Length: 341
Ligand SMILES: *[C@@H]1O[C@H](CO)[C@@H](O)[C@H](O)[C@H]1NC(C)=O
Ligand SMILES: *[C@@H]1O[C@H](CO)[C@@H](O)[C@H](O)[C@H]1NC(C)=O
Ligand SMILES: *[C@@H]1O[C@H](CO)[C@@H](O)[C@H](O)[C@H]1NC(C)=O
Ligand SMILES: *[C@@H]1O[C@H](CO)[C@@H](O)[C@H](O)[C@H]1NC(C)=O
Image (tube, rainbow, N blue to C red; front, top):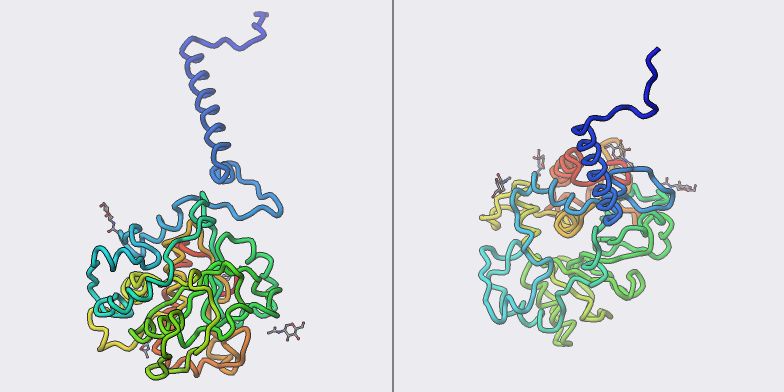
């Protein structure tokens, strides 16, 4: 019998290979540990109570399939300097741009703010959830899960008080327009909630200016009377960049935004919020989106009030077209649904 050496014989070339492998392993481990999110991705084992794995730039990467090379340089909120020092020209009028409303906007921006809070800026990876107002949130018990996201975006006057178990209680941002503003924002929002105004028409700037600068209130020009007294901290108000309306209409719904007068259809605040989240966040989940199907016409569309699909007929929104847009986003993995869609 030939006696074998206790160690397998390794030729010099083999040693080199082994050393290279070891080096690669060391670099991998170092890299993984330096980035917690990467670690979770490479060696995925879910830890109970841990947050969703989050990959930096993931939402942007997938969303570019929908939006093309849309500019991440766009500020999320309109800034005073863009209207004061440099007069940034806008191609479109409201709601797709600010053309013709610059002077009014300048006065609004002078008393509000535009910064993205440091608590969001500083995150390595931003996990966001957009909470729709849909009836599907009823008895969903999603409250605790929703509160765990870094950024919770809510819509219009959707209440939180009394619904915490299903919808959570944290609100990082709330998108609204004058007619959809909650009459008592302090009850439904956190002290640091950003109130993000979506302007559809010049009157919307008039309204917020009259509230914040305590000028004579405007009562005409709204389809529903907005609050005349509104107890908010002006520093919590932001004006959403109309760019998001433009890309939601153009890229998600295929609306011809060059002729805004010919088309009455506009994206809903919900679709706008998803568009914003895809721009701001690294991971985007949605909850409470979708409407009752044709067999449940009598079912409410909202989790907090009884109102049916009929009310959407004259709203200027096409809910079936938006559903197709959201389906597409789910299919390509740009967003993930927490409730049935
Ligand atoms: C985005 O830009 C890059 C380089 O500028 C180009 O190669 C790519 O095709 C563009 N993608 C889309 C969807 O336009
Ligand atoms: C929610 O749960 C309650 C109590 O279990 C029940 O009475 C109610 O019908 C449920 N609502 C919906 C919309 O499922
Ligand atoms: C809404 O969108 C759907 C799907 O794109 C389309 O078939 C329908 O005609 C649209 N409805 C209206 C009122 O424009
Ligand atoms: C998301 O929606 C799909 C149907 O479109 C459904 O099968 C799935 O269960 C939903 N996910 C959750 C978590 O509800």
